[in-house]
Length: 477
Length: 95
Image (cartoon, rainbow over all chains, first blue to last red; front, side, top):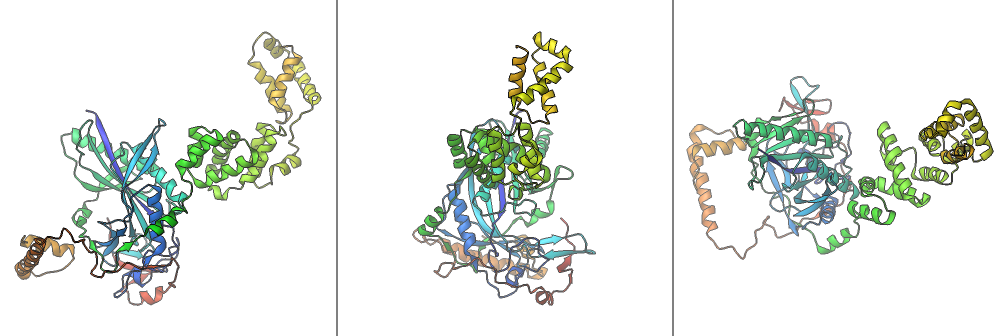
């Protein structure tokens, strides 16, 4: 039987505020345990939550970016459950009236087509603390620094049909929250994490199958692997005559499998009710209009502009605009060197490769956009060859200065003097009579051999096109 | 709607309340009476009334996003039953 996969994602993104959602404690990552957990975060008796304005503004900004209905009056609710890293015994969240209603996000599929994914809602809530199981004898340590950190939970419609689509959606959402500067999106630090609701159904069937909720997915790679594992598992269960049970499953990256978390089942009744400590949150048209004015150019619009104005391919434009930093970097390089294709090739190729290799972010790149553009100008005016450009890039990466400095210091200027190249060519012709004969008799592939020899002898400083020309002239080809 | 003793046990468990077996039937009756009252109220036509999330007809005030809290860990942990290396200790929990 042919099966269809149905996936909905819940993404938790940490909002980039200075202080917590309901208290004035710092949200900075990596502080010593419990040094950023105040009386409100600890849930001490008598404390009251006071909502952070910036959290509301960020949610509105996100809602505008996904073309969502914003809820004029939204309400905070208590989600009740007991766990040691949740001192109050409830998490303040939103239930019936989330601040962001139905919206949508466009994703790009592998075949280049686009698909609109519905976003059911996005609501504000506080994060819980952290349980530390290692390092304490028969006890669990609780660090409440993270308790009260603002989260925006973004819930998608069950519109995704494969693990690949789920990854594309998650990446697009990641890119969006970073563009909007509402989250740093740091996945290692848990600022952007996701749960996946996965089910399968026979192709053509209208009703959804029973779903399992996969928890604890904190990288793009794991989303794909966890979903693929789960889809196989569910198909095996059904084809083996069994039934999929609705349950929460934990993805274990080490074993690359999902396993049941039955212990959570009984606690599933959260008994939500409106939080009497918080009044309804009202957002005004004026507030929305003010925030609308601060919206940056969004990835899709930027991609289209890059395609129209700079004639970049869709692939290049998508890649470059996937992060705002890279798009900005590209624009600086392009403005200076006035060659979009060349700039795009270097940004997506050599630069990205070097960043990946050293595990660096673009913001920490030793080669600034100005430096890269400076070098590309020397490439365009034929001061250097493409091969030397790679060498100069490497030198700039190692901190040896800008392109002009390196060209001067290392004597890397391309040889434009025809005489010099000709004398090198003469030597090579004399030393390789057999290859000359073969070339003359039509074995054109040998051109590469001669050009290569000249490049070798000149240390890459000859212009391959020019060598080619001179050789043909010399041998009357 | 009326609750039986299993419902009462389940509700008590969700709220982590320890209750005496002998009191369960009284709780069941009392809670069922409350639900009865709610049912009675549901009979009122409220089509023209918008639900209130809060008894006060006020709007949530917002605060500026600024860090105003200092580190008072020692102070807070002085009333904790057990602490170690800055962590509050609780009986071991493992998923």
